[in-house]
Image (cartoon, rainbow, N blue to C red; front, side):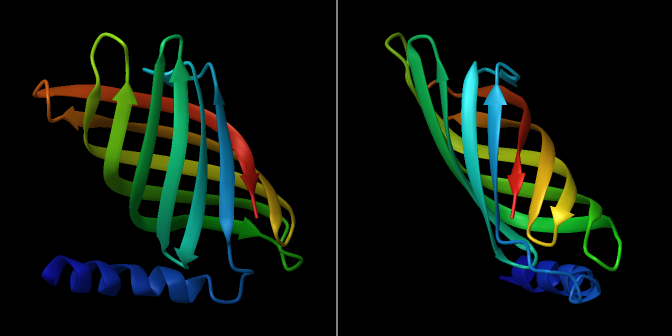
Length: 158
């Protein structure tokens, strides 16, 4: 419980600094042949409140299917938009949750952690083109191993 209070206190100034900007509602990213261990993937991120992300996604590789649900804080590193709310933003998210793979040879499931960074160019106050890079891993409860996760995606933020 203490870490929730500390995290809230640390993130509050970031949320207050972005108060005069339009609220970011969500993002949709696709990972076309730019992720490991998956070949294709997609994710939907809901920006629940100004500094919390909740993400769910699907991934595929020939013969394998995966999914995940994660959540965590989002930090606004830089907001370079002008008075018309057009321009770049840079955000970093630290997400933790559950990830699972279904594979004919060996299934894997367990705790998943990820750090992602998004650079978004807003063309209007509520629509921007986003590039996301993410790095993390998953602890497989069944096989007692750590599986890495890397992804590079492109998407829309609104």
